[in-house]
Length: 272
Ligand code: SF4
Image (tube, rainbow, N blue to C red; front, side, top):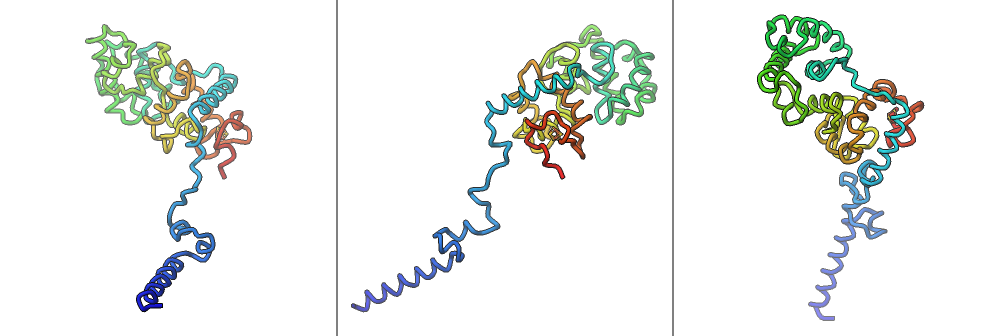
């Protein structure tokens, strides 16, 4: 053997030794690369969360089955804000932001006894409005919004609450969520799904959203719900999930063991 051939064999042996030392004992046995065994790197075989693996078609079918169960459980699910028409519902919904339905239901009878129409509320002394709605929180901004909305209704809409998303969202203090409450509950128009804290939480737990990472991701959750929930059920589902969230699927202690939806819920029994 010539010197050149001997040198080449030495180089090859060194290269093989270097490759072998770059594998863990287990990896060396199986021939797997070092990186596959490194605990700090995500495994290529890691299973995706269950909720991302379900097909849209399957999720839609499961959602229809969930709605059928909810309709048996809560056949009369409706808006918890007491109101006597579109105008009162609009005001109550604006006031309900960052507050509770119970609080708002105590305030609105006093408010509407004093100022029963948009014109009356438009002319009210702002200090008196603030005093009446004080317990709803953010009362200064809310008083401004309900009065500005009342004035706009009088000036632009003949004192009537409009029945389109575009017109409603031109009113001060009225965003898409408030508009959808009025459209769905009073006008029977399913223009979107109202995602409040209960609906957001239950949509995540029930696997009805795949883009909403937590229950506060309202915009993404609404977009997902609009894909899996039949349009005619958009308003109903919001009301029913609020009831179920209050009565069974509590934020801290969901009662999965007695939940009628458990067979269709990917989160059933996963809470310590
Ligand atoms: S099974 Fe548990 S997590 Fe699922 S909806 Fe019912 S209470 Fe909530």
